[in-house]
Length: 509
Image 1 (cartoon, rainbow, N blue to C red):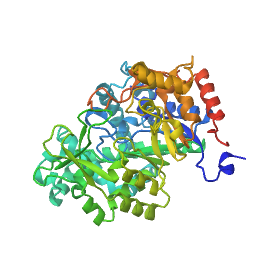
Image 2 (image 1 turned 30 degrees about the vertical axis):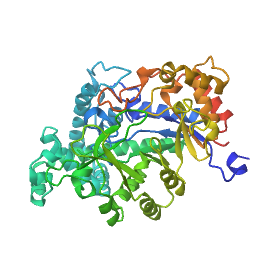
Image 3 (image 1 turned 180 degrees about the horizontal axis):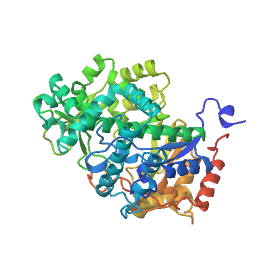
Image 4 (image 1 turned 90 degrees about the vertical axis):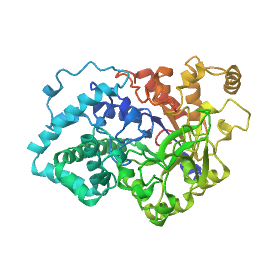
């Protein structure tokens, strides 16, 4: 009898790994959707994992943050595998002669992007010149199925390319504010550039869809990530300005998103994204938001909503402020939105990132729709027994992490931990494992009553602060970590597999 059979009211117990595709090994300087991605899926399946969590997959802008993309719906071309293009005859092995000596443990985006985009341009030309009728039909069908966002995105990126990367609100006024005649003129002038952008999206989604099917066939579900906000300099804001609080003269955000002072920053976090014009969105029956969720559920199985609390109330900071200190909480129609979303999409496979300043109202919104919230073990040992991050306080319906992409690795965290917190942790555990503090926390996560447990790969590998993915409130030097090709070796493989099975999270349990 499985656990779900014996406890029908309890969610199924599952575990998985948090890893962004840029972190895969690859000879091209950045992880991609090629053979190493399938090797990782094999590792997940062999160790009894059933979940793979990724960060947002969109095309990144300044700072290379997956949380600040040029589109909420497009894919990042840098994730396209040149080897898979070679296998389809769009590149050949000779095109890879003279690959630069890229670092194996970091992504140096300024070096990687020019080289890799050169390969993708060559593949695009080959496709344009040599694609057969079936391939052309597939491309046309893709463009038609995604037209509701792809047309605007491709034009936006073509304009951005020809403007030297300038933000849309600084473009010629008629183009910035989307005057029909000006846009038609741009479409005629930029035909080749628009085709190139559509081709990149075609290849990204072709490769991602194949990888997702491979993962699903092995019993692995993919957790995607929806940042609640989109970048100001994005196709989403340019194409749908009425959905956002913008200065109608300059196009700049009239109200900026962020959070008040918190664990990560004494002055809060000022993200700079424009906040939503929720009145307009509600009048349109949340059409844009529903489309965003529907599109994402085409290519992931579950969705983590980053900054979920913003659907109940959001922190709004007026234009011109340099920190998030002088903002205010504004109510959002989260209940009405999720009711519409459920009505149109059915069951909502959503995980709520409910960290930060969480009120009873936010918890009520989360619980009304039965969204699992997040528990982070690194937050558990600095206070008293009522700390909600201590495992004995967990509800079944939650997802526990040792740490997230915004935290230090567990080894790095422990090395900087205060004596007080170390003492609390030691007493909680009873002793420290000779295998390393990371395995103590992995064991705590897997053994907890939380229905879902997600472990960053850096913790499974026992890496320190050098492998941290992100330092919140810093603009540069993030999102770079990669693991080595031989990292997922036998000892780690067997230990993770045994613990997963021991704590009832493997398939069939």
